[in-house]
Length: 306
Image (cartoon, rainbow, N blue to C red; front, side, top):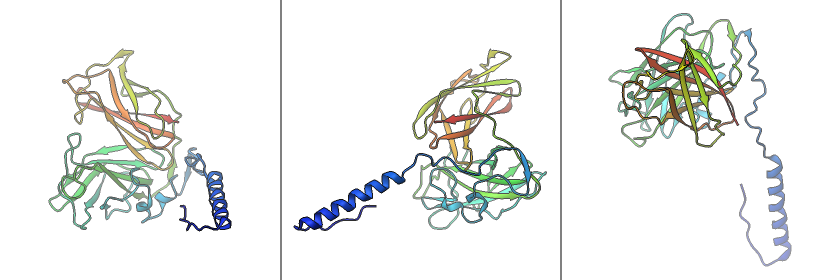
């Protein structure tokens, strides 16, 4: 941002250069703001409309590639690109989302490393952070993946792919790429629930302890109970006792909160530790998946990050 200055022996030139630099610094300081997370127009009130509540970028076809790297909101990063023929999906019925991950040479990538027992994690979520789905798609020999989705409601949905290449320039690098699709129909958006420390799912109570700060690594503890008693029969799921994913209110930025509790047997709980590193302040919608008696449960709550 700063232009280099040619030094001369003339005092007048030096004084002028110093004045210009001071003015630039003053203007930069005045123009800075910590309010970038505030997005006008992102009201989460319940209403019906012809279009969903979504970020402006998400509603513009072909603009996914302009989002910041690392948020999961881009369709390309470090030479890898997510492509899909699907731009719309029908509502009310299960559907298939097909996609390909290509490398810097433009060819489909077919070698992926295992990450929590899977070579590809796929997530679908609507712009108001409802309808969460976590799927493990199947890849054809030509590199085409198919994610079989449960029925979607009308609105704008973002499809996330989380993977680690096992070859090429990005070998060993954890990547998250995404694109949006439209589900036509009358859209009814849902208000984001207020921040809370507990949530209910299938008779289980989830309690979250810890207060992450934006851009800082912070421990987070999740406890599971049922009928007021600690639960200790959590079964291993994806090489852990619980899987935790978060999405940011407003732009749907993605974060995977990595478990730090080691799987030591067929029964875990009640307390589970996670490494939380959420990059942006504001409200995040957390989805905790855990398994008991062979059944998968999903609990959701809103966490405010300062």
